[in-house]
Amino acid sequence: MGDAPDLALNQETLLFEPAVAQAGALRVVLAFPSTYSVGITSLGYQVVWATLAQRSDLDVRRLFTDQGDPPHRQLDLFGLSLSWELDGPVLLDLLERQRIPIWSHERGDDDPIVFGGGPVLTANPEPLAPFFDVVLLGDGELLLPALVEALQLLRQAPRAQRLRALAQVPGVYVPSLYAPRYDSDGQLLAVEPIEAGIPASVAKQTWRGNTLSHSAVITPEAAWPDIHMVEVVRSCPELCRFCLASYLTLPFRTPSLDEGLIPAVEKGLAVTRRLGLLGASVTQHPQFADLLQWLDGERFEGIRLSVSSVRAATVTPELGRILAKRGSKSLTIAIESGSDRLRALVNKKLAAEEIFAAARHAKQGGLAGLKLYGMAGLPCEEEADIEATAQLLLELKRATPGLRLSFGVSTFVPKAQTPFQWQGVRPQAEARLKLLAKRLKPRGIELRPESYGWSVIQALLSRSDRRLAPVIAAVRGRHDSLGGWKAAYRSLPAGELPPWQEVIHSTWDLGRVLPWDHLEGPLPKATLAKHHQQAFEAMELGFAVDSQASGA
View (cartoon, rainbow, N blue to C red):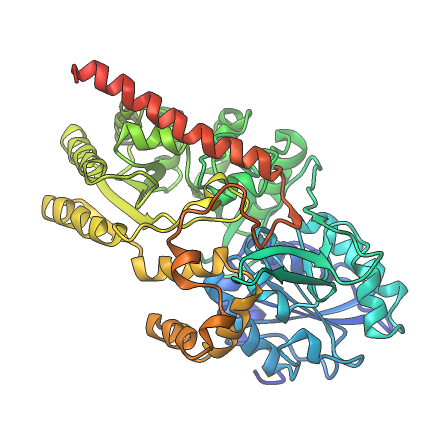
């Protein structure tokens, strides 16, 4: 990165007024572990940057893998927004570019405090914990001001004193003040404070304000050029048992239409004609129909509107009509599986007829395509369940001729802080992805499978403890290769690593100590275990009903 900002940064239109940094302001770098076009499209990254840049007691610069703002000569704070497990090794490259020691224990009083946040770190920061001084658990609206204010009070104090003070701030996790304890077989027994006065656990912080987030910057250089993103809902009331986006961000929150959504939309449309409505299930906002009718007005002629995934049961011809009128080509729904049995297992409250109705309504409204998402390798899945998925999609194609169908399918990956955190990746998933391709591709349905191999690495990062950190350090420079990850793992002493098979593929006992047990998510572990049990009971009940109906 040179001393001058890249040309792309000069094409930005800001939707906030940055503060002028006062003398003695804390010097901050906010990094993103990917290119500018990807990072600037992250709404979470934008919001964190805008929150910090509006403070006159901070001098904030951005850093991406390919460019950034002019660098500071010396740093007080280095922050990273992490939303994807596989981006972890990039953090270490970014630290080295700033001449910051990658291991937190090697940093001295003159090194910056390295902090991180985002869903990956909130769910399970332990594999990356030795690289961070501070991890922010939860919503930045609360945590960022608390972090900055605590540091301002102690900026002249020794590093160890600053970290001990930060550990007292709700939602601020200081990994170096906690140590894992294992038994003689390498099983984790606990992660505990190393000294008195440090909280035994750290709880995720939840923003409960009447507004959510929207874009802070509009730029043609974003991965979605010139888009203004508005967060319509946070979390999801459906609570699919595997879903990190639902469970980690509870409770389900919706900004008001008049005070939250309409002002946010107006702000962006003053400078761009492209609007994106974001959320895990945007159509479940209680006033979504009113928002849609408002956007149907004549004054919005010429804008391009897109929505993220919607619940299939909420698709109407009116939704299809307005989206088509506003430039959308397709709609996205998640079905998870064509098997009623597996949809019951994951708590996907969706009947096959509702999927067919969503396709009919999308076509009737004038949309050209329907994107569906599902999974292979779910717990208890059998080959017949995959055949049911293929059959449903083929019937859907026959029922709605002319509607372009695409099916994005991933391998189930267990996520911390969800009811399926105890389940493992099923090796059968790889063959079942191939079976779907065999059934669907020759019949004109576009299949977009995610790599099984990368799902394995994702699970390794999702369920590991701190013993994985040396692997993350060793894989730098080859982290974009599956072979690189496996070679890095094999290059280290086996007894010092979390066991590959056990972490990735094993189903864990509900009483097992988990690497993230000392970090409190929105729901207690006992509640997640109850939801885990309910999932399998629901599947068995559904299977019994199906068997009776078929005369078995």
